[in-house]
Image 1 (cartoon, rainbow, N blue to C red):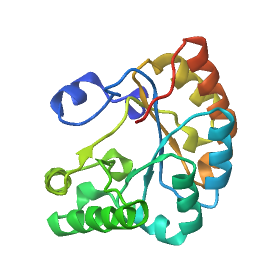
Image 2: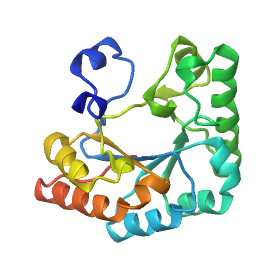
Image 3: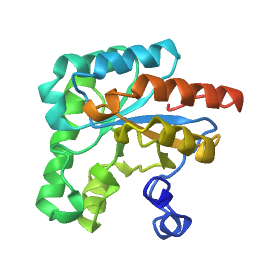
Image 4: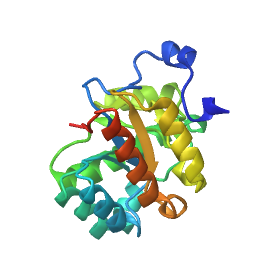
Length: 205
């Protein structure tokens, strides 16, 4: 079942324009779905380990948790586009895809003064409308090298996936939501330790 967490090589080869790995040396930690009521706790964990991350935020949550969103920016992390409603864009037409992307772009630009560079479609699912809307708004689609499965609340799985797939240019995914909050601190502690043992560093800029 690891294909659910590690994209197979054939899929990567079929979509060479999608970003699957960090183009620079270093691990790229990305955090999806926020901001949320758990964001401050996540920021504390990242600060303790001196990690800067890339937060793929949904427009709806930016509006709902504006204070947490501002804290992400203030802490020096990077903000990118995760759609507005966390819809499965693969099931949506051109109009909805464009709306989901553009509204979130505008929200991020308004607060940060910078337009996002990357789009991560919710659930990693997209269609041709998603790709064209992203391209036409100047975004590149970024997926991942592997998912940590923190949303399963199964730390043993997080540990196994990290031990198996962590590489020096990995893009890894964690989550800012209620499910992942249960093991987030434990998971980031282990990932940081595993990276240090391999002499890998974190880099997302």
